[in-house]
Image 1: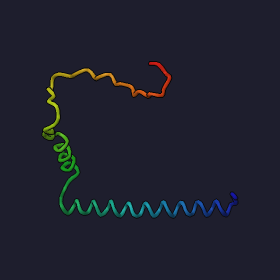
Image 2: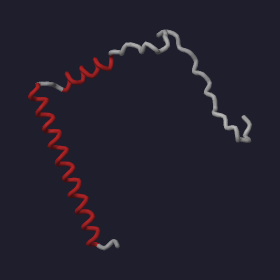
Image 3: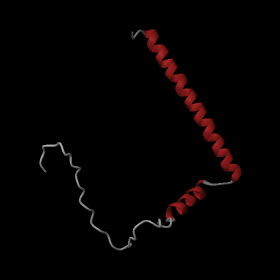
Image 4: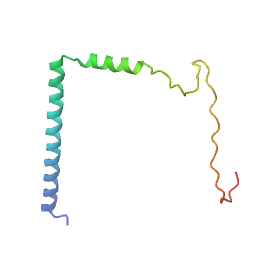
Length: 90
């Protein structure tokens, strides 16, 4: 069951799988960095672009209720679902 041979086989398989995953991830990251270098996009420019996108708010949906920015309403009390066959009393 847990003989030294089976332990060695398990660790070998784990190391090979981990090494393969590392190799493929590293090649993917390197190719992405190379593509960004060719397009001359810096990480700060990319971050600024994301911040611009996050800062912009989309237009409201036509069916959405009108909400004023300064007034906050209290949350409504959630209603518990009722079970007709239940004998429990609230």
